Structures are given as C-alpha cells and as structure tokens.
Amino acid sequence: MPELPEVETTVRGLEHILKGRRIAGVEARRPDLRRALPVDLGQRLTGSTVVGLRRRAKYGVIDTDRGDSLVFHLGMSGHWRIDPTEIEKHDHFLIDTDEGRRVALNDARRFGSLDLVPTEELADWPPFAALGPEPFAMTAEELRLRLAGRSAPIKPLLLDQRTIAGLGNIYVCEALFRAGINPKRAGGSISIERLKRLVPAIQDVLAEAIAAGGSTLRDFAAPNGELGYFSKSFAVYGRDGRPCGSGGTVRRIVQGGRSTFYCPHCQR
DNA sequence: AGATATTCCTGGAGGC
DNA sequence: TGCCTCCAGGAATATC
Image 1: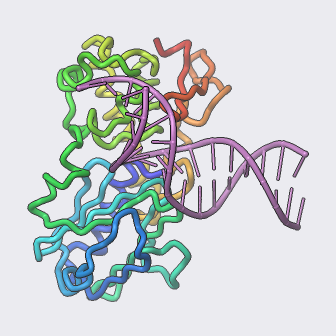
Image 2: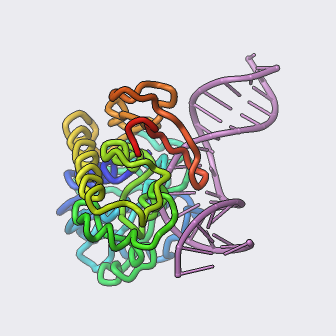
C-alpha cells in the first residue's frame, strides 16, 4: 500500500510525463470519489500547463500555471497507470498531455482521494492544515515536544499524521524495530536519547525505500503489489512468527484496530 | 482534550 | 468449483 516512499516515487515518475506539458484534456470517470470534484474541473485544467509536482505527506500535488493544484492521495490501492492502451476497471481519472501521453488514476478500493485546490489556499486546505512536519524535516527535539504528555502508545501516535506526516503502518513498524522501541510504550515516556535513535531510523527506512523504488522500478509511477516493492526488505512487517534477524521472533498484535508487528526481544 | 471506535471500499485469501 | 467470511489500509467522524 502506498506510503510516503511510494508517493515520492510516483511523483517523480509523473514529473517526467507532466512537468512543463500542457494538459490537452482530462476525464473524470466517477462522480463518487471520496469527495466530489468541482463541476468546472475540466475547464480549469484543460489548456493549463503543469508547472511542477511535489509531495506533501502521502499526498501528491500537481501544480498548474492557472493557480490550481490537483491533489491526489493513493489510499491503499491507488496508482497511476502510464500510457494505458485501454481503459480498465477502476480507472477513475485521466489526464492527456499535448504530447499525446496519458496517465490514469486507478484505485480499486477508493480509499484515495482527488481534489482541485487553489494553490495559494493549499496550506490552509483542511487535509493539509493539520499535518505535522515531514519526516525528513523532523528532529528528535521536535518529536519530543509533540509526544510530551501523551499516554497513548507510540505506534498509533506515529501513525497519526498530526504527529509526523507521511508514515503508514509498514514504515512505523519497521522504524520502531530499527530503533529498538516497543510499540506499546507510552509516547510521552520515551527518552530523548531514544528519540534520537528513532528519528534517524524513520528517515533511513524511508530513504532506503525511496532509493529502492527509484532503482528497481521500471514503471516509476506504478508501485504495486499489496506489500509494496520494498517488501523483501522488511524486518518485521508481515513476518509474524518468523525470526527478526537479531535473535527474537516477530509477533503480531493489534493496536487501535491495526496490526502491529514487532520483536518483544529486541524492542523494549 | 485525549483516547478509542467506527465508517468508507474492493479484492484476495482461506475455510468448508 | 463456488460461496462465505474475514482482513488489509488512511483519514474523517463519532463517542467515550
């Protein structure tokens, strides 16, 4: 399922096709995406030029020269298909460029979203307004402040986009394992010394996944597979009952209705 | 206010 | 083979 690294890889892939190109046309193929698209979406996008693409948390942002930004979230099954030869089931949105190229947003489970937002309003747009810092901008001290006084377990707190933006279940589990922190530990009880291990662990696991995506994916914009292209490198995620690699055995527990994978021997 | 539960949706896996 | 149930996930919303 797409998390920050997959979105980053997707944005970089789409950049090759869209950046600097004029949008020749778009087609919204479903009226019932997560949120309704504006009725004038077609007029606002058609004829505009894509000036840049970027990522914020797990959102991809496509900026146009008309002051609008197309913002997509891939949910858990979303991906962009590049130059599809034909329309497939769950292709919800199409963009055609002046070069005759086409990208299709395909999302079977429709947990993703698509919005057109004025670029200058993006920072105040509700889904963005509450987001915490980007992982690569996070520091141990900043994280300590955000966790101060919190009694909830660290795992769901890291999953909360207000604490730190962009982490999903997979990379939270992997980062906590690398940092040797038990996912059940109360967020506010974790020492600054341990947070100084956790923040780099988060950054490292994300950077490695981005690098793996960039180097191994033939189709940059289409990470697929339930566990993502980085799955062969997971130490704990999805490995219930198997060795963690450092002498312990991975366990699966449920926190906040979500699976947590960790090693009780290595994570304290 | 903070913690926890529920909702959305579909396809894949596993059971019988 | 086919039908059933369960599960996965992020974010918004509701309830304690």
